[in-house]
Length: 295
Ligand code: AMP
Image (tube, rainbow, N blue to C red; front, top):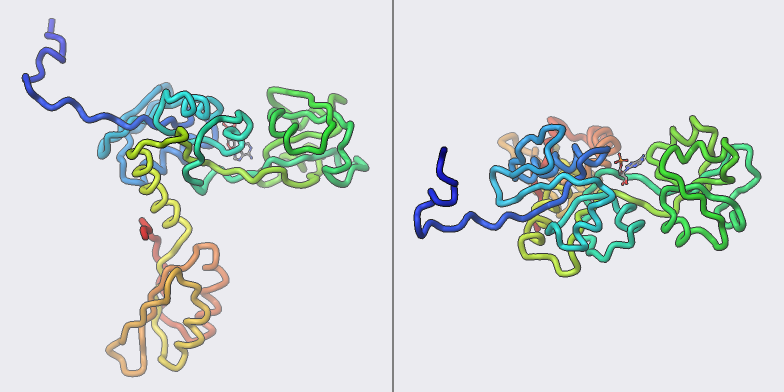
């Protein structure tokens, strides 16, 4: 039988580095984007099997622990892990005593109040005394005008009005198609949610470092690097169109009277920006992804 591993370590060998423990959702819609964030941050997460409970990262002293998204707030609060990724809605529903260190730019949804399309109710303010089904009883109680009768359910919330269990529901909505399919109409949002990195009230230095690497990825994902050529005469108009994070760089080209313009632009503006730039005289327009944005 092989000797226990510890005994085979050379005397005086340095201890293995402390690993930062990060809780990551084990299933559901936040799991894959959370693992993709570790990948894009350059940590080199090992690909976890479907039944894995944890996985290490190859390039950083980080260990990811796979736990249910709704358990992450408590694990972080109790210091079982150093930090965790989960939905802001779950953090608020649990009332966890944690710091919301960074919004991660995925898992966007809103907690909304909805009623059957035929209902006469027009706003959340008219819900006084109504029966409201939800898997978010604490948030619903905190965000709806009192008093409402809460009907806690574990799933299929949209069915509750049709079953006669409730007059309204409070549930997460992203596109709104589930509401429409179930004959429901939104009365408006109660909370805007997305995935967040959370940590104990006093995050460790290593957690803050991880947050700063994540931040550089999150910012980069919403940006594009724009390059174009333009006649000098069109420069003023083009610079006015480009809403760069800083003033654009202007570089002379070999062709007299022509310049290159480089700038970082919001990804969400691109669809509107490109035709306007062409119209203003820009040519050879290139748009490339940004991997990291710092400072
Ligand atoms: P899941 O584990 O798939 O039920 O989702 C867990 C988390 O995903 C929720 O707590 C939200 O933070 C987030 N999420 C994003 N969009 C939606 C949506 N349309 N419905 C439910 N959860 C969503």
